[in-house]
Amino acid sequence: LAKTTQPISMDSYEGQEVNITCSHNNIATNDYITWYQQFPSQGPRFIIQGYKTKVTNEVASLFIPADRKSSTLSLPRVSLSDTAVYYCLVGVYNQGGKLIFGQGTELSVKP
Amino acid sequence: DTEVTQTPKHLVMGMTNKKSLKCEQHMGHRAMYWYKQKAKKPPELMFVYSYEKLSINESVPSRFSPECPNSSLLNLHLHALQPEDSALYLCASSPSTGLNSPLHFGNGTRLTVT
Image 1 (cartoon, each protein chain N blue to C red):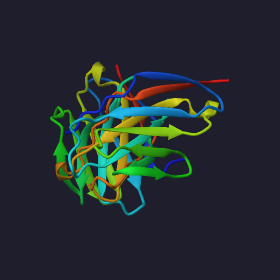
Image 2 (image 1 turned 45 degrees about the vertical axis):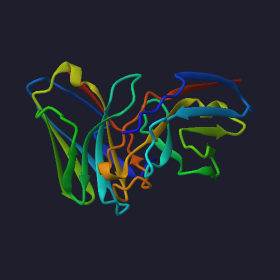
Image 3 (image 1 turned 30 degrees about the horizontal axis):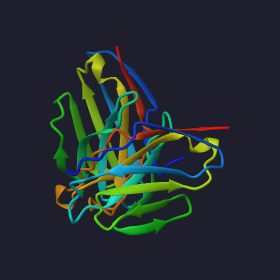
């Protein structure tokens, strides 16, 4: 399974754009890259998923370079409510649903 | 609110007790999962069910026994647990086990073993 590496923590201020990078050097051809957000005492919540180039939804953007060995989650204009842990997941299709969470990035947004 | 409902929200049990955690989804998803999460750690995969059949068991001790009675329900039966089993137990579902099939999580059951 592709192992992911993310910064353990990041600090930001309200209104700023936040970029969290995930490294996945041994990503396989069939792998998708998925990001989840988790607040304390809640289950993780799906944010965005991509395979290559750029994906954007109402919450975030995901940038994936051509070699796919890393990806960057971009949160525009963060607010205090974006304070959470963000997980990057990379899985292997033929592992039948074996999605393994990495250590995650604890984002703290300050006023 | 989430579309995956877990009960109970909190559970305290002794090491000799038998209890069950329940998970329910009505999104028509055919894959269901149990994860265990300790404080300040990422969720750890325990079991995966695909079309009501156990497809992955991540070498979980036999004191944890999963059951999938139908496509909407997932149970985790607990027996003779240890204090170190205290954690947040998360249930998730997805349309399938394909990798472009994001997980939908419940808010978990906070388990304390005394």
